[in-house]
Length: 193
Image (cartoon, rainbow, N blue to C red; front, side, top):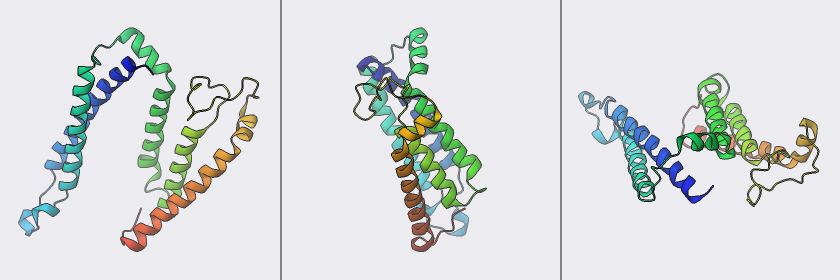
């Protein structure tokens, strides 16, 4: 991604985050303060979300001003949109949003917390570590090594090529979800869904 593309991306993302953080602040300010019950105002349920929304908004405004100073507001809609849609980073962002929504809206509450969190972590790791032979867009990036052009294609060879990734994703998913569930259950005494 070139510097001008990064500045445009910063501009768009910061505008969305300003709206998102502001929305969090508004919604958390509407939460009950429980004053009629004599509860300390600093323990009201909306305090932490309000602070998080304020932090998101503040940092997004800083990013917005930085992108504006670097002319990130100059967006070539015709060529810029098609370039963004073809970019592997955009596809990964959309897939991340998709698996996060599936985790939060479909799996949580229907499956055990440890199972649903383990599946989410497993899918997330595979999303970012999968080595696809047909993916040449990441060449030159040491974080995403490009496989050789002669690598066999198809599901079977892809699974064979990614055996270590699949194994480590499963190990990390089991460990992370197990530790999280154990800490919340025994240390924080919180019953997870």
